Image (tube, rainbow, N blue to C red; front, side, top):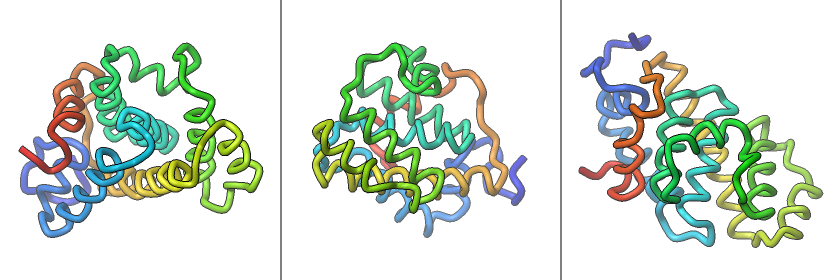
Length: 179
């Protein structure tokens, strides 16, 4: 049970919180839509991997698993990919650019001032442009906020990866805050 009395206690994670305060839900959903599905030099799948990774590092099960499921949907991967993201993608052939951006995102997750000139130079060397570096930092920062919102109010989350399949597909193909 959440730390506050939600309108619908059956809604997990951020879903219950968005339902509780629709006036704050709209801008949060718009931000997620823009960051994860809007125009970017990064694919939506790459952006969902960043969001899911940051959420995992923040120990936010709901956000990690839902966004990892969205990455699965974007990339046509099975639900086992959720656990692959948790492990840092050791068996997944991803670009050096994405790995460098994930490193930057991890630095942001620990604290924004942890991003160094060397981290940014390494991302550029791996092929990242300023827009991609910007987007990785903003996704990481936003997901630190989302994760703290979800966990700070003590929401519940289904445990099995399979419980997130439909949600991930809806996020990937319908969007955030859309029916």
